[in-house]
Structures are given as C-alpha cells and as structure tokens.
Image (tube, rainbow, N blue to C red; front, side):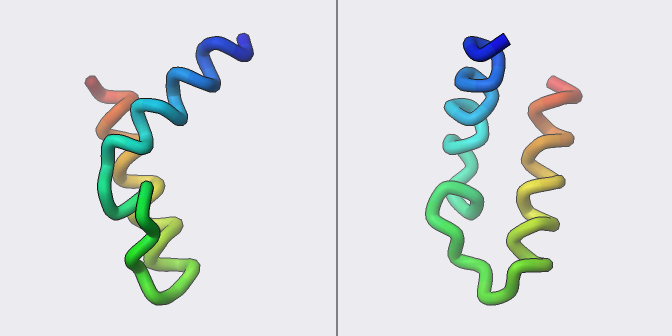
Length: 43
C-alpha cells in the first residue's frame, strides 16, 4: 500500500501547479489538486 501512495505523489508532482503551489489561496490549490488527481485516476 505504501508503494502505491508514494507512486501517486510522484505522479502528482509532475503537475507543475501542484508541485510548486503557485496558487494564492488554499481553495484554488485544492481545486488544482483535485483536477490533477482526477486526470491521474482517469489515465
């Protein structure tokens, strides 16, 4: 299980907006995180 979580975060870091956190508010960052997670899940 730990391996799958680590791989998920590795894949998530490929999205630049999530990895560098350029968003100004927490809600915008959470929205970007949700979009990136959905794209990874649908892949």
